[in-house]
Each structure stands twice: as structure tokens, then as C-alpha cells.
Length: 310
Image (tube, rainbow, N blue to C red; front, side, top):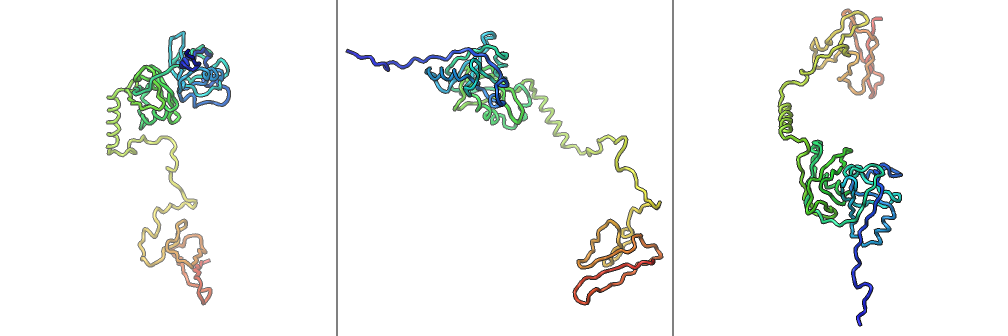
């Protein structure tokens, strides 16, 4: 007699296949979830997690999303199970690929995908060329993705700017899983890219760097009011001297220059004080006489005073 045990056969794998109403992440209650917008994962209800635990589902969980009206499909992973019952929340770029509107029904089915070995992307804007290391940026952004589907237009964010990339090719299949894999990445020229235009721009920038002409001479002449362009006038009516007497008449290097208001005394000796009794400049007939006055016989400092005719 043969006895058949209950564990004689392996458990038959059953697929997860449900239909939910889809909404964009911006409709998710609570705080804004930018982490969902920057990746390729969705948020599902808690009942989906309960059903998945009872099924023999392969990990990591990968799902195929289908819009039955437009026959558009894509693949994604799951981030959390916190959505309201009967609802799923998708990134905006994923809803655009599936041509879904808010509240539209979407079919979600669990699938198993091969591991990626190659992928090719095409930027939809030439601004992507401004990034110094495109592969490093793409590698960092793809950490928020679980899989890639040929024909999808994914969105990545870098330096507060969103770049859209079209998935032109994936190997070994049209949909591949990119979790813990070694994948070769290639880039196609951006949409509207012309190499001749970029060469012309590069030559133009190099010519500008070799210009010998002063850029200031190319500026237009100012028109209208220009600040600080006029000339000042003295209150006593006399003409302003452009040069001081010390500059017009050379003096000996050992003689002290006459005091000029507003100009510091560069020949100042520590320990001496100089007082100017007469604020107006002396005339030709007036002579400034200085005589030393010693305050103390011991060590101290010298006060120099200028006598006035008045």
C-alpha cells in the first residue's frame, strides 16, 4: 500500500489578477509623496497584500498594468500597501504612458520578468546633454525603479529639473527587471539633436574667447541721466584745485608735508599729537610757526601747536 502525503506535489503558483481604479499620486491623502513620482512603483490597498501572501508569488513583486480601452501595458513594482480599498496610486508619467485618467479602471496582474542585461534610452530634450555624467545620474535615479518596459517614457529628476527618457530597447525581453543586475546602458541622440548646430555653437564660443577687442568698447553709450558725471563747485566760489601743493612742488624727503583735510598723515610718529588751531588754509603772507612744548622732563610725548595770527 502506498500512502500519498499532502506535500507530495508542489503548490501550484497562482497569479494575482485584480482591477482597481487608478489615481495619480497627487490625489493621495496626506503629505506629498515625491518619492513615488520619482520612481516606477505604485501604492496598492492592504487587501492586495493579504491576497498576495496567500498566493505563491515570486519575489520581488512585479506587476503588469493594462488599460483595456487603449490596449496599453506597462510594468511596475509596489512601494507600499496603504491605499484606500479599491484604489491604486500611480506616478504621473505611468498614467501618461497608459493613457489613463483619474478614476479609470486598470487591470493589475502579477508577472515574472527576466533580469536585464542591456537597455537603451533616448532623451526627449537636449537639456539632458547639460548633465556632466548622464550614466551616473541615470543609475542613481533607476534605484527607484523595479523594471523597465520597451516603449515607456520614464521621468527622472535631477537638480530640481525633470528629464523624460524613452526606453528604446531592453534585453533579453521587452520588459525586464532591473533589481540587483549588471546592465549595460546606451544613449541615443536626443530628439531634435543636430550635431552640426552643436559644432557651430562650440566654434562660436571659442572665437569669442579669442577676441582681442575690449568688450567695454562694444557697449552702447549711456543715454539720459548718468550719476556722478557732473562737476562739483565750492561754496566760496573759488575753483577747485586738482592737485595739492605737495604734488605740484616737490619737497625734501625729510620735510613734513602740510596738513590736507581728509588725507591721513602717513609720517605720523607714535607718541606725538598735532593740533591744527586754524581751520582755514594759511595765506601767502601768513607763516605757520611751530615750536616744541615739552610737557614733562622725563619720558613722555610731544605736543605740537600752530600759532594763529588772530
